[in-house]
Image (cartoon, rainbow, N blue to C red):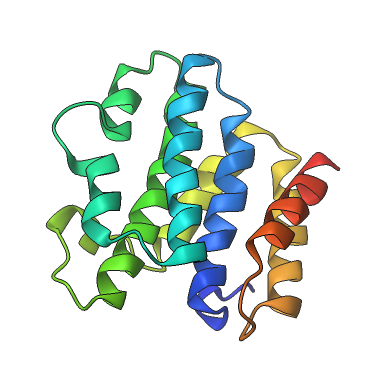
Length: 167
């Protein structure tokens, strides 16, 4: 069984992001794609540069206007709602890690974004396409073999994500 917590913290976030980026390709309403990509890119920036704080990421999910939770509420198709679940879970998990790095108090909405969120996240992703279960196994195996303690290489992971998820 896959243990998310056995990965380095950046790898924990990266696995969410790689899968969420793949999920975004399933959007029925293609207008959602840009907002999802922007949110995920902000999370990648957190891993890569550590210049994004928890409050910055929280704005993507917790501000009153123009956030990804609001966009999910606008979604009409069940598939789009599930995809937003994947994106929101990814941003929330990244947000929590960013707050923890800076030892800042977590907003209530982010407190639940712990390692247990991964199960919900994966379940939403698998429902999008039956082949996604096989993709998950490949990704988890790769991460377990390469990122339990190693620093993540963002460009390598993005390339890997494209390769693994295109097969």
